[in-house]
Length: 120
Image (tube, rainbow, N blue to C red; front, side):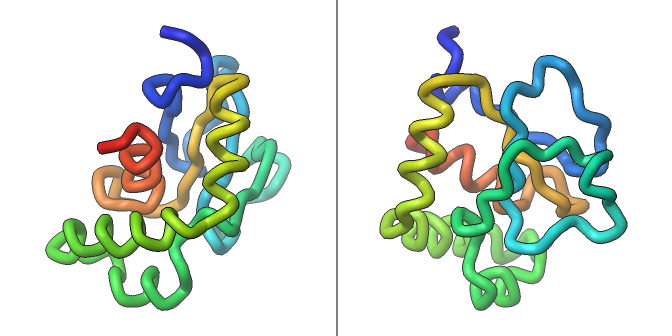
């Protein structure tokens, strides 16, 4: 698999230790992860503008029952978001790990963003 292909985009919780094979670590949350020192996070780029809007984030509230609708609404936001082009450009050059802070590893904006970038 070629570096930078959508299949090469990884997802990792911010509180897990960085790994050598993470590639470019991009924080995709609007807020910095609570209690995490910047040095320990080893974030290469904080792409706040690719995160869901504050309104959408509050509406979702990490409620798994709202996940399907959250994905639709977030995809609509991403369709008009210039930060997505920047992220695609970076991912086209190198491996990317989307870093997020949410506790739920299955229902969070990084998962939805990776699916959006992969065309799912």
